[in-house]
Amino acid sequence: MGTKSFRSYFIFFFYLIIFNNYINADQHKIILNSLFTQSSYPSINFALKQITSLQMDIIFELNTTENVIIPCDVGTTVKILFNIINRTNLLNVLLSDACQNVLSYIAEAATYFHIPVFSFTESDLSLSSIDRYPFFNHIIPSDRDHNLVRKQLLQYFNWTRFGLIYQHGSKYTLVANDLSNLTATDKKQWELNLTRGIAYRHGLEWHDENAKNMKGLLNDFKARDVRIIIANFNQTIATHMFCH
Image 1 (tube, helix red, strand yellow):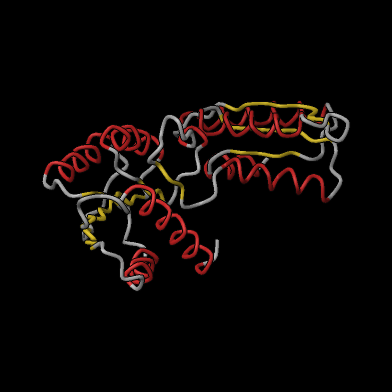
Image 2 (cartoon, rainbow, N blue to C red):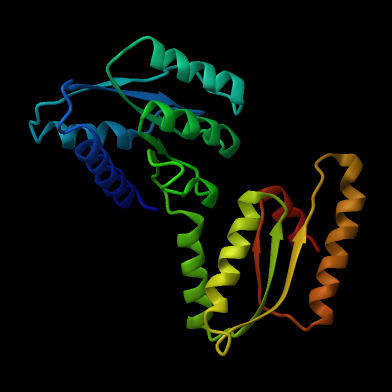
């Protein structure tokens, strides 16, 4: 997503959360807390300037964790979150680019304390349930949005017969199931010929076994003459897979 689109997307969602949750609040100061694994995003300051220009009866205070890198660790991040909640009784908004397993705990806590959370990195479908996570917001397109694009790509090139490879784990399995459901709505147009999940163990000691599993998986697709393959896995597996 380009910088201009990213800014527009962020500002739009920020407006939505502010107006839905705080416009009738008695308190008019909102604390914007950041939990980042890298340096702060310039789009945040840009969005705040745009909101300030509206001259609403709300004061925004950006509380950044400057020079502090938040690790992808549940215990550390949740402790910081509770410290944020404990030190102020003002209205809070949380901005984060934490990894998925950390964000799921943040989303649970935020739901309990009614704290809006903006994620700059997470697209996992498991966090897209409005009923379960009403205060969690994706700033980037979700995996379901990516599946809609994949479907349009198949349609554009008239690829009616394809296969699907996905990494084991909820983040990837949910996406694979969602894509299968999208294409299953019109069985006359698409044929999902073969679906395979892949288990991958990290570490040099598992390299040969991983390579063997990948080779066997790809042979299955060759045997079924599947030439169009949609794959969904992390960068490590992608690098290893394309070597075959």
